[in-house]
Image 1 (cartoon, rainbow, N blue to C red):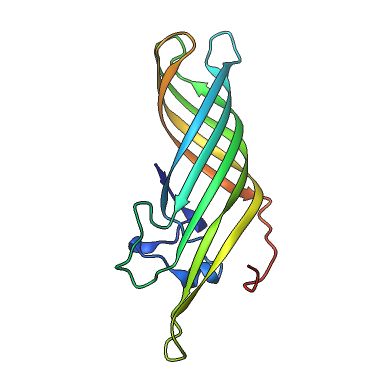
Image 2: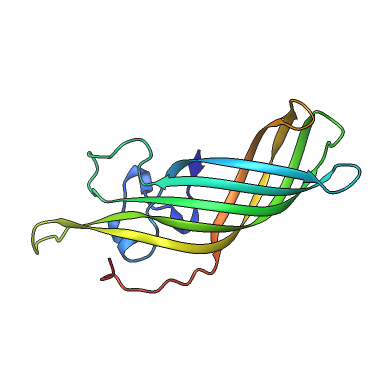
Length: 181
């Protein structure tokens, strides 16, 4: 499960806001889903410091569960984010089967998607919409994580954690105009 924050969020009260997306104030997404694969390599004898590698796919949408036909704005935004990360983790209970950890990572992402912006045109003409393709863009960012894991055996464990990914922290420059498609 994903929850958008900062400039990525933009479906306020479960209603997409085309004007804020068109003006560049938000990216118009709200929630989504994803999948991660995480590998950990122990770096010290005690086992408390680990090197982490992660591969993540996130699908972030304006409306995660179906289209919203009962809202005033019929626009939407859908994004794909493919992320690879390298980081470090501190394990508080390295000698136990149940482990508690905190960590941080640097990540690199490829982001793409599609946007539909709705123009209401009050008193000027009939409402219309325009669709835009979000081309692949490379971004650098960071991740913060915390959670717990249970080791099933020496090589495999089950992990439950929370991870904050800021995939758009560095290399944020974008070029273009609203007339770009």
